[in-house]
Amino acid sequence: MRKFLLLLICLALLAACGANGAEVYEPEIYEPEACAPEETTPPPPARNILLPAEGNASDFSADAAYLVELIEAVHPIFILEGRLPDYYDALRAEFLAYTAQPISRNAFVLAIRRYFTTLHDLHASIWPQTASTFITEPFIFRDGRLFLLYEPDVEILAIGGVDIADIFYQIDRHVFHENEAHRAVTYRLQARNIIYLHMAGAEIYYYTARIRPPAANFIVRHRMIDDVFFIDLRTCTDGPHMYPVVEAIEQAIADGIYKFIIDVRGNPGGSSMPGIRMLEAMGITSPRFGVTRRVSEQLVANWRAQGFEPDFDTSVERIDFLPDYEIAENPNNVFISVLTDNFTASAAMEIGVRVQDGNFGNIIGEPSANAPSCFGATSPYTLPNSGLNVSISSSWIARPNPNADQNTLYPDIWTEAADALDVALEYLARR
Image 1 (cartoon, helix red, strand yellow):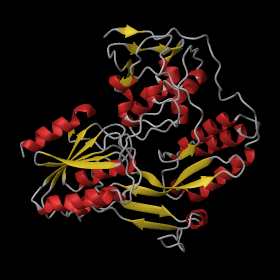
Image 2 (cartoon, rainbow, N blue to C red):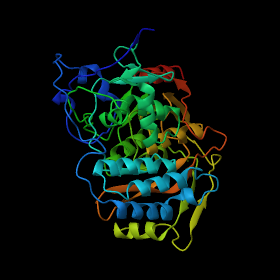
Image 3 (spheres, rainbow, N blue to C red):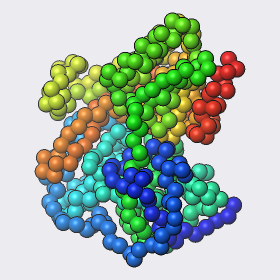
Image 4 (cartoon, rainbow, N blue to C red):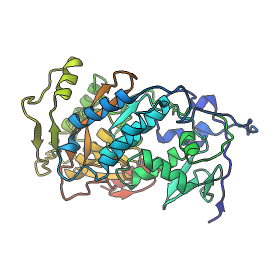
């Protein structure tokens, strides 16, 4: 293995790849034909970016105190025995002490992200995010080491004169990893984040670029591939766009089709309903996730402020539903291959969990970065002074099968994500 000390990365991102927007990721962003520069341009002189400690300093202490009070009143980790980490009080005190002094908005956002690591909750988030700028050369993390994606024999030992372990340390201070797949995804992406690089002390000459992958121009589409009904679900967004695919599934079942593929590679999740609707259209009774919902005054008020009357008992402090995988039924004997990758998360991952725990088919591709048992059911809240928005979970969601791995959805057939569809079609052709 050839090792390469990466002291300087300075590739430009073409405008065609998308220069503005939030840091949202899909695997397609790294396809060579989509994002490879047409020519190499010499790097410009060193440029200063807004570091966490720079910018206009403001007083965020009131918002910090409000956020801590809100989190402790709403998040279910405080009512589940043994889940709150021992270091919570220390990081809480650190957060309040740090935000008691005037700091920049970027620094406040990063401080919140560090405080959120105590919740062990990937769904806990804040937006808008810090104004992150990224090195455009894509990385890949494997076997505990970082490499260039398009030159996989080139290992990255340092960036900007800083050992890669120091960069990983800064990432780990601000990001909670639900499993090793999530760690791999985070390192390959955030090791390119200029903010984390500067926090680690790296010196970078670069072209700036805000990275956002080209958005898919559809939410869901379907087609027949020989005798297989193929569903390509890009995001788990419920609505009228789901009606045609549900009707097509029902017609396929009536016509005797029993082989299905649901592709959720790169799908970050959203609502559970698209997955539930598709499985119900196949005649399936899904296994049931367990739920512990914390009921708080803040949660109820939040629902009503958004115009919704809570569909749960508001007179109690918690509501518990036990998981049950034995209720699963598949009267039409359908077989579903679910395609996943490290970017499959949340409600998209749930589809794979339902299929695996219900024994309705198999998972083909890569492990999920989101744990099958995790915190979720988020609600949005706004910090009163800064106007920053946070998402806070209200429930602990438990995988239907308590004997299955609770931290990772592992595929039944492991393969590179790019090959998953071909592998699934070959597998189903033999059934």
